[in-house]
Structures are given as C-alpha cells and as structure tokens.
Amino acid sequence: MDTSTVTVIMIVLGVLMLFAGARLFALVVGGLGFVLAWGLVQQWFPEMAEQTRLLVSAAAGVAAGVLAWMVKKAGVMLGGFVGGGLALTGLLASLGVSFPGARWIPFLIGGVVGAILFAKVFNVALVFVSSLAGAAVLTDALFPAEGTGSLPFFALAAVGILVQGRKVFFGKKKEGKD
Image 1 (cartoon, one colour):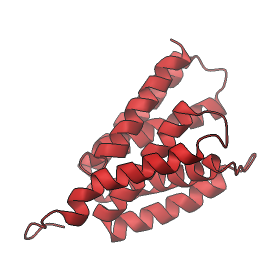
Image 2 (spheres, one colour; image 1 turned 135 degrees about the horizontal axis):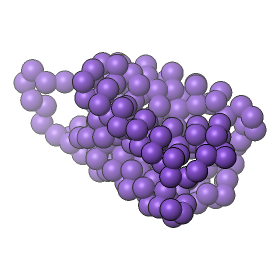
Image 3 (cartoon, rainbow, N blue to C red; image 1 turned 180 degrees about the vertical axis):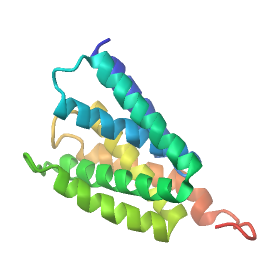
Image 4 (cartoon, rainbow, N blue to C red; image 1 turned 45 degrees about the vertical axis):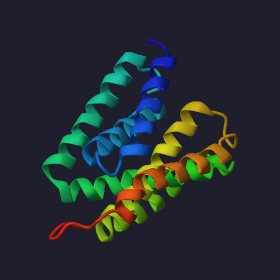
C-alpha cells in the first residue's frame, strides 16, 4: 500500500463531508475520526507500518461513527469538536500559519468552538463545520505543501456551504423537527 491509497481515501472523505455532511452525520463523524486518528498515528508512531496505521485509523473512524449513531448527543459534541479542530487547523494551514510543535492549540480552540456551535445550532453548524472540515481534508490531500491551498480551501468551503445549506437555509421546515 502506498500513500496514494490514503490520499484517495482522504479525497473521498473530504468530498462526502463537503457535500453531504448535513445528511450523513454519523458518516461525517466517522470520517473525522479516521482523519484525526491518521494524523495522530503518523505523528506518534511514525515507525508503524502504513497498513497498520490505516487499520488503526479505520477502527477509530468506525468507532466514532458508531458512537455518533448510538449516542447522538455525545456524537454531536465529538463531531463538533473534531470538525471544529480540523476546520481551524486547515484554515490556518491554508493561510500559511503554523504552530510548530503546538498544532494542538488551534485544534483545541477550534474544537471547543465547534462543540459549542454543534450543541447550540446543530443543523446550521453541521453545514458550516462539515463544509469547512471537508474543504480542509481535500486541500490537505490535494495541496500538501503548507500555504498552497488558501484559494481552494475557501472556494471548496463556499461551494460546500451553498450545496448543503440550500435545504437547511431555504428548505421547508417540518413541524416538530429541528
């Protein structure tokens, strides 16, 4: 297995998050779990075989998706946290802003904001966070050099927000549903 396999997986997850995140919440949380685990396993266990890293990341993604499906409130908070963290770190990376050795600081800040947003205004936040996270995953996969994905990040995020937001912002609200 080579890194192109992981790149393809990241592109597929990014596209799903970007365009269907508001409809496929558990899948988005699972995808976010995979992306987060992949980054952590690469950083913490660089000597681990790529297939093992892929299996560990896939298991984390499945666990996150199942958690989101079974315990929606916890899944909402988890999805908001990871999505917000990935969105902020992706945004900063696309702008060329880096935190060497302390990437967790903007991730934590974005995570807290994402979790709060998800808890308060779930549907609207899901559109924005899944679009931003999808754009971050896609630009990271397609433009791996820091600072090279600024325009694509914002363009993809805008398209994702418009595509997903059509129903949330302009669709008919059903009685008794959030």
